[in-house]
Image (tube, rainbow, N blue to C red):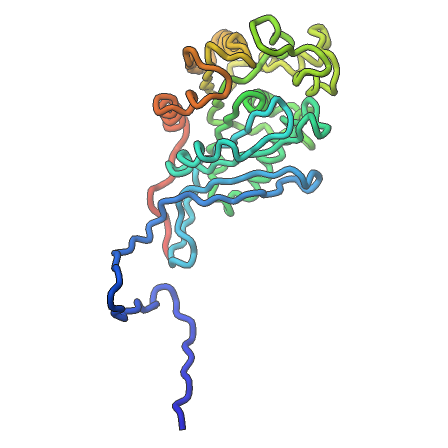
Length: 320
């Protein structure tokens, strides 16, 4: 008569026994389970009223519960807004670049807005970005977010959206619901347009005033009229005051899409309001190139983040 099979009951993580079986002709490595790679959560729908709007979220290396460590650390949040000439974005385009910042202890959320090719028009990008932030803050525990440490960062039309978002938190017009009056630790602007009606006052390879231009598309496929009151409402310089968060601005002197002078106008307005800002001229560079992700450029970004945010502990705060 065979012996009965003895099934084990589950162990706790603390009591789990290591298997010591010696397997011949194998390679043995000494394991280190310290997390070193950020986690990536993709295609997260953030607005039940607009189920086609998604975000991708990078979370710094944290211990998963199965390790027996209750990792409750919270990290500063970088809200990244991908540029797209206000059309539908490819929100994963810069995740390889941004993963370095997640590795260094920042939650990075790349958020989509409704593009002008899908019916989005001013101020839809700003409203959508605010809705995305609402979602992130309501799920802060799930994604290890420190809700008091928020940086807005965007490129091109995404930078415009980030700038406007930072400057209009007290204005319900820029929200799907009510104004939030949130405070941000800083804004990082990669070659964003600012005074949209002035884009054609500087050299470009595009025109920006017709109904068919990417600017016109953002305003309901209408021709841009500088005297139209909506252009004042859409101008971030309208809202700059001494209470603005610090700015870090990058722009290339050979930008053929968004003229360099757009960032000069922003810096001048920030200086006039005595707002802390750093302007980085990327000499000889065009719009959206890898020059903005060079070692030197990233060093400047890291320094800005270190100065204006409080990093989480390098080890979990509590253990089981």
